[in-house]
Amino acid sequence: RKMARIINMYDRALNRIRAEILSMSELVEDRFLKAMESLIKQDEKLAQEIIYGDDQIDKLDEDLEMEALELISLQQPMDKELRLLASVIRISNELERIGDYSCNIAEATLLLADKGPYFKPLEDVSRMGQLVQAMMRKSILAFLKKDLELAWEMHSDDDQVDQVYQHLFKELMDYMKQGPTFVDQASNLLLVARYLERIGDHIVNIAELTIFAENGERYPFKSRKRGG
Image (cartoon, rainbow, N blue to C red; front, side):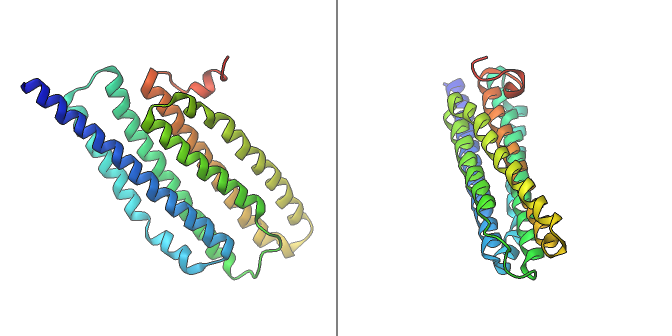
């Protein structure tokens, strides 16, 4: 009976950690969407809110790390359960980094705010944002449901993000070559595109950690292609 009670406490703690990962990802996604909205609408007030709210995400990251470490030290889990808790710590860190990039996007909004209307609609930047948001949701769902097929999809999803980035990079560089008129805006938008591309990379890391937690495979996307 005592053993059963310990297992139940442990399972409850794991469930709580999973719920906290979900809450943290929802908060990070909300911040990301608002950062993108602030950029597209040139909304300085919204951008300031994102920057000031970053401490909340940092705190969640610290709390999750401490909970996972406490569980490791108290329960001394083996193999799969240990991999799961190690992955939780890393996933929480990845989400925290995505939160940081959302702040960077908000800072770019502030830098661009006094440069007047955009010289072109931000269609590709918006497209990158939508792709990245869909990836973020999918990667967390894959982790929570232990769905390796879904985790594997991040590989090709990230290729799409990279393709839009390459196209946008070339286009913005071409604008900058036309003369000083475009340089300020184009250089800041290039930074935003780079932040979005990096967010995609962090989401891929979450998918890799999901696969690692389930079957112990390290860096699966680097070590083999799907079906290879």
